[in-house]
Length: 361
Image (cartoon, rainbow, N blue to C red; front, side, top):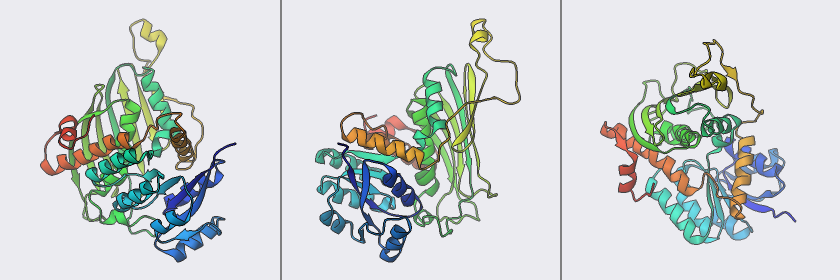
């Protein structure tokens, strides 16, 4: 008989609604309580998604006390994750949390260590890893289809008006909102797809005059990876146009991969095994690289489905969860090193940075 994992979910905003759908549609999960401060809105939202009978709480501690659960899902601002995680560990609940685990590296380290001491699994929702594009990039690089790693350029230009009613408000005042809320996904993707760790970062951050954010919303990063890859990253939430511009190009000694749109449209060019055997590594120039055939996916839903089931497999001892607390610390450390680099106006080496913070990489 399939075990059903009972989940207390904190937060039912835009991302929380996606999680509620994923949990509701899975055969082995159910939400036993929703938690949020605004009870009127929470109950109305629960009813609107067809779960009017799911208990709603303003107090997480009370929800944990009154409801039997196996897992705590945090879709709440990172500033409260530490307190909420401690409540969960005290009740032996496994923890699945939205990124970043916390904004503060020491707080995140404390969560990881105390979760391990309590025997609780920890997972961070780095769901972009489980998109078909990301899986294909990782697979092709691991198979050596691009040859030796060379360089990569990652561009993400978006106008995210933080005042919009359908968006979270906490990024408006948080430290380095672009880095901690968005770029952490992108640097984590590079770590995952390249199969390599970041060795150093050199960073500049700034805030345009029309920004809705109190702190820097633009990021430029130069970085090097342990496999020899070098990357140039540009990200912003204050683009001058409303249309999202996304492009991720990866070059190797035997070819190139280009993702032309966020979540889809992956193209490959340059690699030809027959030509390579004659010493000619690249195909003749073509204007349009070959499209990589990928399954369709509903971003934030299908990738979250995979993530949730892999987390459950780790709880059951079948596999190690790829985005567990220890792995997430490495991505968060890279982001914190980026912040230090911007403030100090110098290159930061991750080995030195992690050593200063007691992190074993």
